[in-house]
Image (tube, rainbow, N blue to C red; front, side):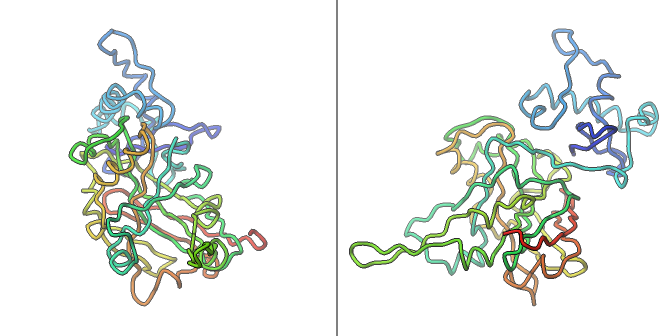
Length: 328
């Protein structure tokens, strides 16, 4: 099942369900209320207004969504609800989750960078926190600050569906609600030139420290969507194909099969320190550039236009780029 959030009249946010071979999106709440499907206690389930709330109500929310999808599975069924069905190309998609309790992003999870990195004897996944204020929709404008080279990082993002702590890897994927596309926009030059410090120790040694602050967290630095795809329809999270284009130039390509840490390991590792809750997001790390591009030469602000990020089976983001002079 493919779910989304989109705007209807008066900018009201509703949950959408993909139908008609992904050509249309249906207002799930409006159709469900017309169906008047009772739950086991013979009371009408109140269909949530947003995906995070849908996840939080658990299986009853998924069951209600499936009722709607089944009703829309035939052309005769769709004809009954035409007033609540919209062409995808005329739909204003929103970010599927805008207020996660936790938004993790995995760093250096690609063998190309990991294999040559200096790391501890027994390394673990490296991650940082992204702010929810970074999140924008799949077609919203990325505002690029005046801080030097800023580039894309197309990534598969996991949406947690079930609460858990100290989750074993073999059970980890049972805690997934679905997957979506995330572009982890990064101000690479800022990271290299200003967001670091070298500490001098009393013994004369030095330590280079970098913390993901502004260079990962400017407003609009996390385009996301358009769909949240449930595991039964999503690609294998450890074999997904990722691509990115800057205008017509193909700038990133790769697969999550090249990740150092698989999705289940990431969920398990994070849950050891943080109780995961419905709606939490884990962005699993990017893929490499397409020759002759490097991650240091893909420059959104200098080039302008649009940046597109795609994962086969999950969908595509296409975000206009706006360079903002003076924004530091």
